[in-house]
Length: 79
Image (cartoon, rainbow, N blue to C red; front, side):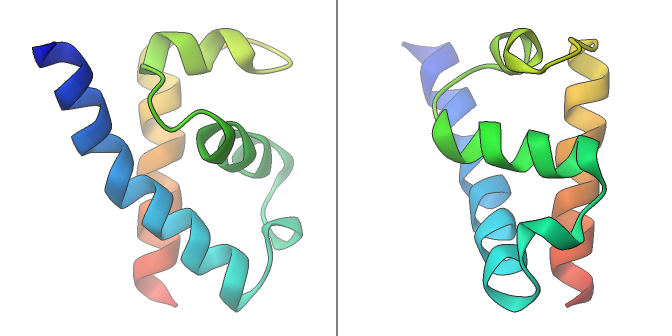
């Protein structure tokens, strides 16, 4: 239960950032890897980084997933 709560707590700001990007400039404005990550996160708000990695066309490490999500948050902050 604690892990699920941590996952949901981490996903909330990521989802808010993705929705802001989607509203302000559209997900199509993102490079392919970030766009795919954004779409998968929106579709799977309670999935862990490992689970998200497995959903990508070309799976990447959990660290790579975290890096992409962090980049999305940074992009949203700059809007």
